Image (cartoon, rainbow over all chains, first blue to last red; front, side):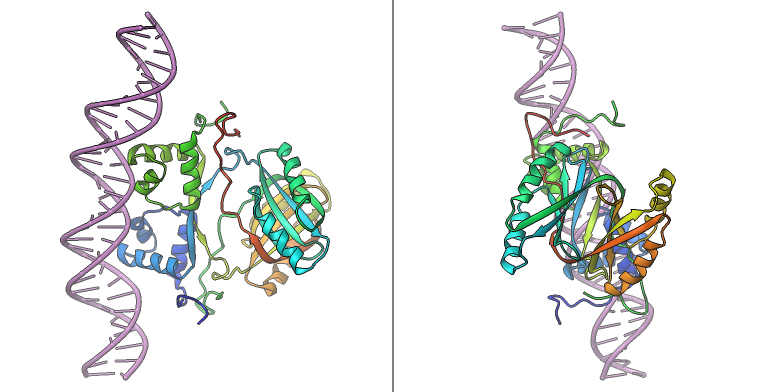
Length: 169
Length: 169
DNA sequence: CAATTTAACCGTATATAATCGGGTATAAAT
DNA sequence: ATTTATACCCGATTATATACGGTTAAATTG
C-alpha cells in the first residue's frame, strides 16, 4: 500500500489506451473507444482511472522548437568541486531556475550532472555557459552541441505482458 | 517562402495559447479562450492556424515512466570507428530501431552520438548495451546512469517579444 | 481626410461529443 | 446454486466544438 490510489494490473486495453494517448493526446473519447473496441462509457472510465492512479500525469502539445526560437540543443556535463550534500543542493536549486535548462540529470560515472539545453542559436550559448559556470560548486564543464536529432522520444515502448504484469513502480 | 504554409509573426495571444497548450494539452477550448481573454471562436481559429502552420506538431499524454516499467534512465556516448558517411547512415538506421533508445543525438565534441535510454532496471541494461556495441561501426561506448532526475522538460520557455518577432526557423 | 478594405473579434445556432444513470451479462466468490 | 462484483452497453442529458453572420476597429487608399 505505497500508492495513494490502489492500482491494479493493467490489461491489454489499458495499454492500448495509454499507447494511443501518448501519441494522440487529443483524440476524441468516441474515437479512442472505437480504436480499443469499447463503447464510449467504459473507455472514458478507464482513462479517468488511469489519470487518477497516476499512469497518466497530464497532457501537452508538442511544439516545433525550431520555429519557436529554440532550434539549437546542447548537452553540458558538469562536475562539482566538492561532493558534499549541501553543494549538491545549492547547485540543484540554482540550475532548475534557468529556463534554457530543459533537463538536468544527476549521473553516476565520471562527472556529476548532465544538462540538456534548448537555445535559439550558438550565440545564445555564450551567455548560458557563463551562467552555468557561475553556479554554486561548479568545478568544470564540457559541452556537446547537437548537430542532428536522429531520434526524438515519442513516448514509451508499451507492450502488454500477460504473465508478469507490467513492472510496478 | 521556405515554409509549406506562410506563417506570420506570433502575437502575445498566440504565445499564451502555445504556452497553455504545452502544459494543458487537453484543456477545453472554452476554458482556453477565457484564459487568453478571447471568445471561443477566434480562439479555436488560432489553435487551428497554429496547427496548420506547424507550430503545434501534435498532442500527447505524459505517462509516468516509473509506473510503466521504465523507471531507469541512462545516457550512452558512442564513438564510431570510421567517420565515413555510410558508417554513420548504417548506425543511424540501426539505432532508431531499438525501442529502448528514447533519443539519439549526433553531437560535436569528443564522441559521435549521445543516446538516451529508458529501461525497467539495471539488469535490462546488460542486454541493451550488448545490442548497442554490436551496432554497425561502433568503436567504443561510455555509459552514465541517471541517479536522479533533477529537472524534466515541461516545454519551451515561451516569451513574447514585441520588437524582434519570435526568432524564426 | 473620408471611403474602402481587411482582419479580428463576438454572439448565436447547430452538430458533435462528454457525461450520467440504468440495466445486463459474465465471472468470481460464497 | 446463489450471491456479489465487475465490466460493459445503451440512451438521455448536458456541455462543448464548430460554422455562420454581423460588428468594430484599424489600416490602406483615393
